[in-house]
Length: 69
Image (cartoon, rainbow, N blue to C red; front, side, top):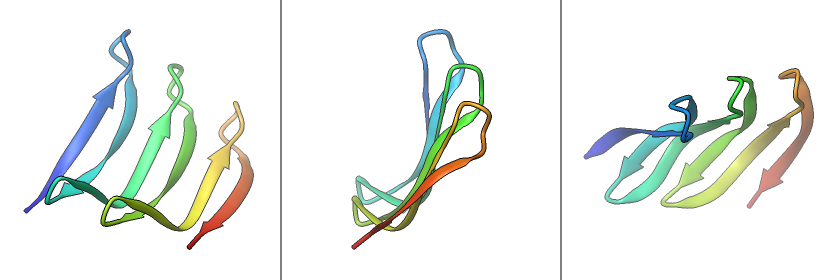
């Protein structure tokens, strides 16, 4: 069963959100800085990074895109 997951910084701001399936990360995930700007996003397949992963700069603009196996 897929379940939504959220992790928070100590100050209560959202740090990460995604889904778990059978105890492993799955699907699309996002990580955020304390100020709320997106830090990184990408996909997991059975707990392993897969496909396209994007890293964002401090303004939220795309900094780099990596391709995972």
